[in-house]
Amino acid sequence: MSRPGNDGYYEVFWPRAPRQMRTKTLAPRLDMLEGKTVAQLWDYLYRGDQVFELLEEGLRARFPGVRFVSWREFGSTHGGEERAALAALPQRFKELGVDAVISGMAC
Image (cartoon, rainbow, N blue to C red; front, side, top):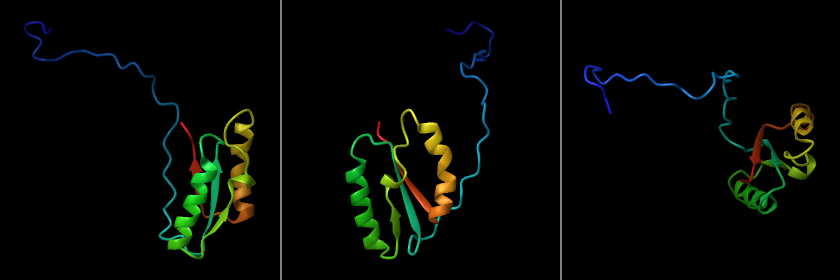
């Protein structure tokens, strides 16, 4: 309930801490996948193996020249070795000529 004379002004407390990290600009999107290499990342939860199979099928129909690097190449992106696995990705992407990534995460 407002007090008389406060003119609708209320002081509030914001419960979150200030941001600890700055946002980064996203990489530009590819205009097409024809002739590109797409890496698949998965956390080994839910049904990523089936989902990636369907995604490959659909994307190959639209972009016959697309190449995929399987999630099997990278291992799980979740769990005890998560930090090391994620830290190694930029170098692996460079070695494999990856242009784009599909990262599948289960909830």
